[in-house]
Image (cartoon, rainbow, N blue to C red):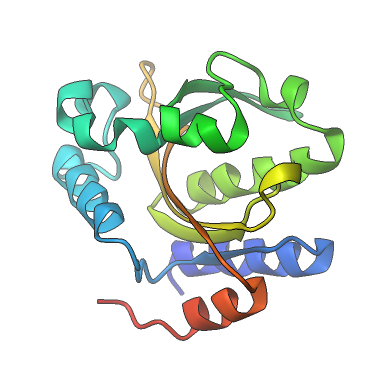
Length: 187
């Protein structure tokens, strides 16, 4: 079985066990065309490598996606800790601008495990993954999000960065949204 599917199964079992309104879909069956567009940019940037370097995805290349992007850098593995390297304006409208901040220092301790699990899953898979989630922000519980998360190598060549592109939208039912995403076919 492909590493992406194994990583997604582990993530989904953890999400179900811990009661997170979140799901990892390794089929990359996006609802939003913009996510597929970014995936193609990532694939072109990586060339023959497993994943591209952060420096190969320039601001010029990502210009139309910038407001919807976040870049997370794993700065420690024991325990896992992430710094937000970049948070676009649309991302920040939902979660607040966390650019330059250590995640563990700015989100409630009860949400840190959930936060760390998505980028850790992407790095474990070594491949792009699609996530859908109900937002975990007190005043925005009515939002759902579809994410593309892709791994990147840092300046030292090690995979320790995750680029995330999100689309937020209102939803009346997380259960209905999740059911629809599970039955969506990859295109």
